[in-house]
Image (cartoon, rainbow, N blue to C red; front, side, top):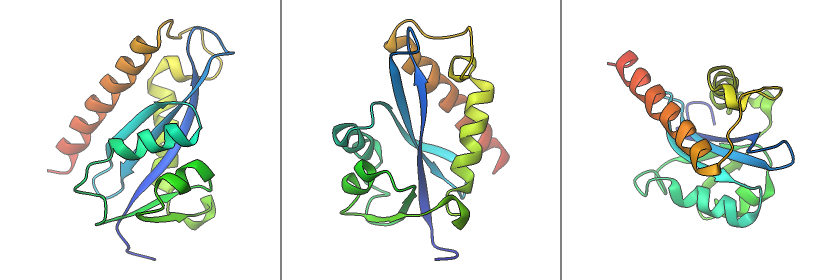
Length: 144
């Protein structure tokens, strides 16, 4: 699988309003240009995994592989595509794992022990989307 073009998938947990209201941010990253191609904020259910899958452009579906951890809901949602469940030691999800650390570092409301948090889910999604757009613009400038 070395050299195989694939989108890396992973999820990061966060909370809104209080620590009992946990959400998951599903992120799809293109390792060649390091841009975020899709994201979804929700739970870890099959329905949320399907909604995450639907956020990915039809241009990518059927043309690339998808690499993720062994999250079963994601495996079922991407089963019609070239999806591969891989371990962290394979290196096939290394860029998305590094991005998750960057995301937590740069978006204060995602820090696990933080005084910064979103009170409304809508604001939370907006802040994350703003960060992804800014991040993608910076990555595009680096790869010119």
